[in-house]
View 1 (cartoon, rainbow, N blue to C red):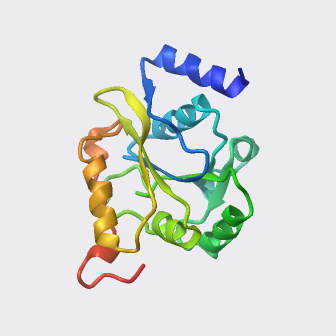
View 2: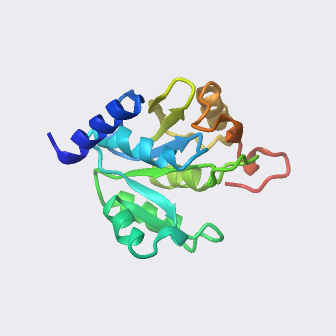
Length: 193
């Protein structure tokens, strides 16, 4: 058994959390609700437990020495949250060039309560045609895992309704920080995806 899987199982046992669902072998993986730094650890444990080696978008401010090399070793990809600078296009190209591309995205973009999710995950799903897997962390039940997987249709409201239905009963590690999954593009005067 690989070291990462053994470590994940040990950490689940010690923490009292449990993993549920089957992790994808390729595609985009939303980690939500994103209410705590523990979400990162729990999501990583879920995927390692399934022997998936994910890539993750992490704010570039965390890539200082010695944390930067550790994050890169874990599969983290630095991102500038103020302006993607072509990140979505680079990731679309990378996904097209490999079979085992799993990218974890915290769609909220922050651990604080927010009214709108970032659209990068949706644009990536449209641009790559990769399936979108709904991962979750639920503090009240102490479960972290994998929900449904689907290919986005381009109908933002219908796709987000599906996502909202899934996350309706997921509360995060710090439930008071969880928001409702919504994109600005759903608003009547919102920008196009």
